[in-house]
Length: 487
Ligand SMILES: Cc1ncc(COP(=O)(O)O)c(C=O)c1O
Image (cartoon, rainbow, N blue to C red):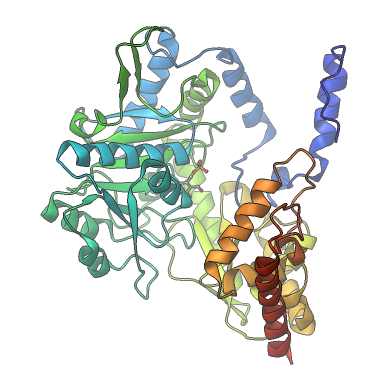
């Protein structure tokens, strides 16, 4: 790695072509081989977004009274989204840099609303499947997170949620849909509990916000999950996901200012001037807001409806394809664009299937509890469904013939993390490994090397002898266990 700033500046052309060369090993999203992270339609659309972004590249949304253009984009994007979610003009909200910022803001808002009502030990109730952004928000803002288990259908267990309610509960969460299995939580029932106890309720529609309303327009039957449900007080939705905007565009909308005012930070005494900020960031990227506005204008209701139709067509074909592979099954009954599938054959390790698929160029996320593979399907995947299902069939057959793959490569690492009975130790070890990967001298994390998880096996300095011994033993235990299972 060359981390020295060049003494003399280099030519733009040279730099730009070098940037292209850096991307050669990145996931192949342009050919729709990536099942998360990227929402890409085609080059023409992407260049259009880039132009919109570039026009406001330097504009800063930090001070809403400076760039009137940005305030207008924000207001209109929030207005369009509020209309999609069936809320009236009393609603208010902000654009954020992404789903995580939107979710974290909800935690901060409801914590502070709780404080204003005398709750000093705030707690929030979330489904086990709530996105990690919620755990992060809880940790950052000092709110105790209470995770409610799932029912057999993989939606949150409503009775378990109600049991967790107490005088310190500042918010309840439901997902529409949640990330791991793509299930829409029972929003109406959760909201009834929230209303009964006078607790605010947030719906995480970071994924669903820009596809569920358009699925409804396609006459696909869905439960009601938005502001039509009394008791839902806020919703987060990412325009940089199914809204096909440039990265850096999400939003959070509140039913009323009564909630939103707890999100706003004000400092009236600062020598730098009176300061008011509606979200987490200071400088806010004008380009992302302009591109989000442009994406909505370019697609329109009809364009998004057509994208939703194509997406669900791809999802249904994938579901049918997986149903034809006897060793696999879809988890739950996901209604929207996210699905996960697992092995129901003890001879087929699903993480090994993931490794074989990866060797064929697919980028697929791995899940745990239960072990599974994941797909966040978009309209762009329509054209690769047959190839994907063929590769999946062949990968399953290959893993069945080669059971040793379960204790090799990334399969061994994911399997070990998911099954090792020393959760605290794994957490600490992953933390060390991840933090160390940010050292300037570090190599890239290699998930196919499970020994890297062992303290001292990676780049860690903290190779405490006894801890290393325990983790090494746990790794050996897992590898032996999965090898024994294959016999
Ligand atoms: C349900 C849900 N909420 C929040 C997020 C966080 O979004 P971001 O990655 O934009 O921060 C995600 C991301 O996939 C998600 O699936």
